[in-house]
Image 1 (cartoon, one colour):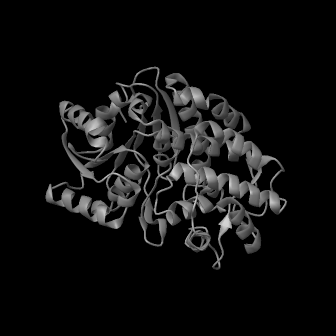
Image 2 (spheres, one colour):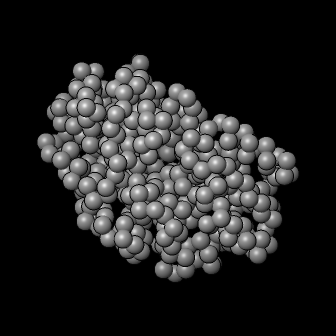
Image 3 (cartoon, rainbow, N blue to C red):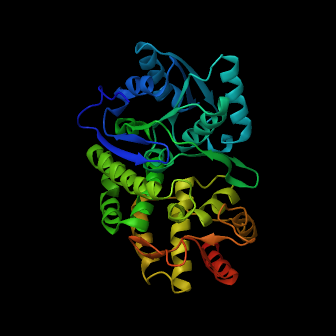
Length: 372
């Protein structure tokens, strides 16, 4: 893969997969390498750029222009912005557009946007013509830190989040931290939740770095952003390399997500993904403390670290609806939800497995305390 146009200041993390490895390029100006990287990812010259209606004019148009200037035939395909549109209907519309445009098997898909775009566009790439190469250009902190890395793609259904999808590793992820300058603080904060999660499950030092740098990052600390994104990607890359298809260790990346996804879905996505996962992390730490798996004080440390992010609460949610969505989680076994728990900050509890059964009455009690 050609990376001759990459700024020397851009840092690189390799993500190993069963088939090959791919680079995640992190830093200011990384997007300058898009044409060279896409040219190396496909045998043809055709590129389908997928973006949402908000990001298209901010970043995707310029990516298309750069690809065309680099000798590619690039077309832009957009869908309405928002989690509510990460659904099969959007997948069908996008794939039909690619068919109508004559996009063939020698093409490459480039996603430009946040986690919704990398999930949806990645799923289009995974299924179109039985699989096209994909390059992700994440434009949100959440997508750079988490969603674009690891090869998980998919869409939501009425039953819950990400229940239809595929594993489809990208050829590259290009995390240009300059693109974060257009991101509203609230969305930036949601990405930092995922960075804290990576620290919580794997590195106390990274957890502390995110906590200590949160206010500066939200105020535009570009160098700090590049460092946080790089270190978070490195943590996720290590986990993905050990368990690409989420059959064991990789489940620890779902810390906070069992309850988080249920809260997000029960709110009809009024509570954003990052805010829901933040609540989920604190509540799952409380679950662990209640059953003696998690060290006392862990939930308090999480709460304190999340405070500078000023995330909205999950007020007014219906308890029974949240409990119902728990049963649609991908980790459900034998009709029971399972939870990723911490041993302490910096270490997931993995003795006896990565996901844990928690008594129903404990789950209900913790949710009642949180939602009332």
